[in-house]
Length: 600
Image (cartoon, rainbow, N blue to C red; front, side, top):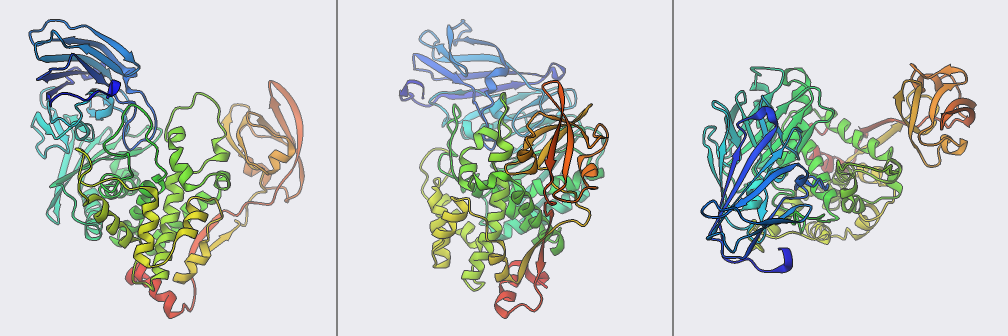
């Protein structure tokens, strides 16, 4: 609360949302608060959206704010800071009504888009809260163009316009899709209604049958593993929008937003499947089994945690696991995808500098966060999704090995869920309480009867090289790393194409480029007189043996020069997880427990 004062009794809160002129990209918002006894009310716009750990300052798109009392009389207000409007309520007559408009034209899991085809609405980007009254129940009334359907996790009805939320947090954790052309289908699994709603920009009547069938398979697998979730229905809001630079996914308590860059019938199904499996596993991991501080939320500032590697990265691991267990992936595809994650991590220079916990803590710097200054993130950071997924793999196999195949990471997930989400509630938000980072280690110890402290100190909190084969061998598996036969010598740069050639965007520490004196923002124009204006760098370098000193024509600060660089050997780029021949009975038991009937 602003000023630290306690709020008075609960308010009767009613939110009105109108998107009747979608081509303006504007939403009209009205908040009615009745039962007001406080001298002032502070209306606060969130600075961030749970699930995306970046400060976006949604107040940037608020316009035309006004306030009135019970009889329509104007009320004085002032802006306290970038996101807080204070309304004088002494003369309000017990009721305050504020109105404002919000501009939205970004299709993503964080922002809102309002256009002629639909309104994809994310609560944090639209709805202010009344400070001190986030626990109060909320009624939401929606006005949309005639014939537009409304889809949300608050109701299975597509025509209902008055919705109820238990508190503000639940209101904004429920995205809305309002559209004349949205199509939906549903199925029931273990007593839960699972609905899929599709908004497509290129296909007027997309066939949902394959999407429905695929989703049903991994949903069934996840529901079989984890305790029954406390919702009657769940909604996948799927957007197929070719032309977007990035796809996206965002988890919510009983819904998920998924955005694909390809049409459903032409690559969109495969693109969206991993994301859908990931977001559904969030039903348990992060939305209910949650790090301390992630619910209820402080929407005004960053909320730090060291556990995103577990909340997000281990969720990525389980998205792969359930695509495999459900039969959607073959064993080969499952192992190939895990090897891809290892390869990605091993290609990151930042793995030597940043731990999984540090990557989690510093997510606010780079989780799709806008950067106004140049950074060295390419050389100093790692992705907590990526390393967390690899750690999930290693933890799962290590737990299976230590327990003789009797226990797994599944047991840790279920036990933590029951311990923390089934605990007495600590707040109005949800049942249970948040866990601390050390609780993950404690549960792994409890499940196995062994001590994982060294593993966590070295690989989760530390930056030591991960023990791939020491762990994989326990399951009769081996990580194979090889160099492609036609691989070019390594220069050690990341580049982007410009008309004259290739602009260096990062120079890898210890690389040939660094030793030779190449710098970020240099433009590589030629390799030994061979132009790079249209050719790829690897194509030009492939003709040289490693250790060759090669002249580069470089443009720096508008001037050309020749810089000689001694090329490094090619970087191994082929990663695969292979089955060892003639496994021991112990190895075979661990592998069979992990891969099931398809272990061989």
